[in-house]
Length: 100
Image 1 (cartoon, rainbow, N blue to C red):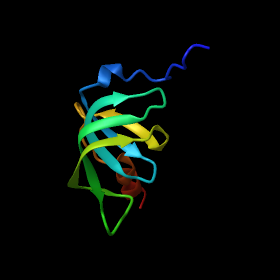
Image 2 (image 1 turned 45 degrees about the horizontal axis):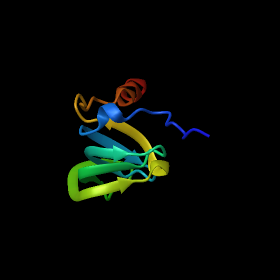
Image 3 (image 1 turned 90 degrees about the vertical axis):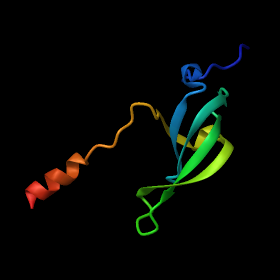
């Protein structure tokens, strides 16, 4: 039986910076150094974005360095390249204000 191929090709993202959202709400970013068919990720120079203690669903700009980490593929819910990312205003907040 041939080896299983992954549904996602991450080869174009190796040695590039990614932001990862993990199950449970934690967010990390770092340089993708490797991965396997189960989408376990190896990130170098990783940093974790600290959640707001008042609102655990909101992530702050505060970070803590993690170094070299492995993210289990089963815990990864979202991957996005950090180049080209920008924060935009929440369009739903504007709609709610107009309704009130």
